[in-house]
Length: 356
Image 1: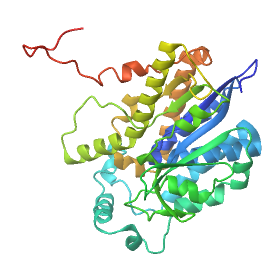
Image 2: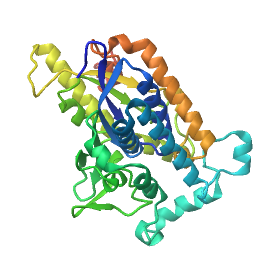
Image 3: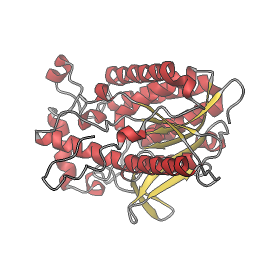
């Protein structure tokens, strides 16, 4: 809840592998802003990891504790990746190409995952990221954190629907379920149900934050581009774009629902407890991530991670400079502009589409 000298926000954090370091940068800058209070966080995959690390740090040491925890986590991700067989080629390193599209080890592994089930490919269930989360995150602190509510989304394999875990249910299993890519890891079983990556059903889930009564300003931190100006031509580009569309589709549907609800409230002037008006905001810079392919999400070299962190801080810094005063007042994310091409105008009897 906002106080006289602070404004409150809820955060929705997308997943995206190592691109989650962009979100780390955003969070680091927002935590510096003493005029802001983060009261709720919904995260999926890498966004879920950022969310629980944030809550752990907040409970342990406040804002500075959260900033330190996030830095330690992402440095740990990078350190663990040094031993991965999937690395950039020497030529890509020389040319400053952060993608892994030319890496023989990446291409071999990608092909293998299409042919061999994860349970057979990795029968021992080795997952360095799980070990890292387990070692660095104290889930007793996460579940006890009262500074911010945390929601983690995974996809129920059997039903195909989103399952949202919240305090005091959060554990290393719920986080790894949220980040379980089905071609890479066996489904994570929790209470007899199997779960895959939450990006398929909620990337991230917005409805827990919309239902939250403590705050009406929802900030979406988006790391996957909604729009690409250049059409994909190569097979690799087509695969990358399909991945982006797939992992953005659930977010777009929820944003569309919020837009329709807002239009209903604006039209009728009615607002009841179950249907509240939300102020939406977006922190994102599509131009900066368009050159990154899906393969770069597995690039965890520290130079790359740290550059993404700096970019994320820049996103948040610009957003605060331009939109801080709007928090608590009005939306800065124009949903009407996002969906203005949803319905294409019908052509007249002569086959001509009428102008505006």
